[in-house]
Amino acid sequence: MLRNSGYSARAIRYFIDKPSMGGISNPDHVTEMTGSCGDTMSICLSFENGSIRDIKYQVLGCPGAVAAAMAVADLARGKTIEEARTLNDGHVFRLLEEIPETKHHCIQLAVKTLQKALTEYSQKS
Image 1: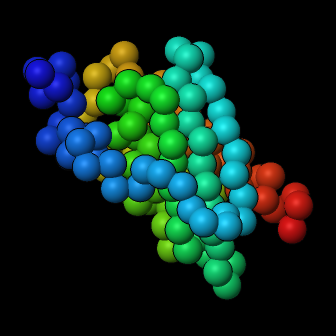
Image 2 (image 1 turned 45 degrees about the vertical axis):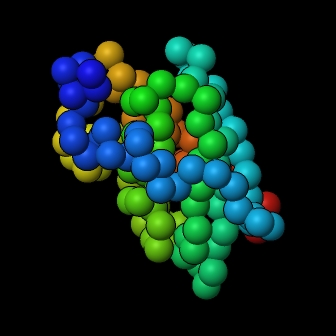
């Protein structure tokens, strides 16, 4: 059903497996955003030596939102704050390979949630 809706095999795998879904014990920072469609994402980050050691999302939303959040987590994990700030919608779209056009806003929400968390963490550090 998801494949016929325009999701790639990779996006479907992210949605089914949810490899970066959940929380982190004693995270260094947590933030939340709600998109224009009503999908909500919460992100937990842990840092070590200036790099993202762990990243987890909690997502209340559609398969596109889950897949986008999982892709952002994979792209950001292990990167420095400066490197993670350069991640954009294009990076996520390329990793997911295909996602319905009506779900592109999900990618934007996942990226914006990460960027918000990085900004807030940098301001408090």
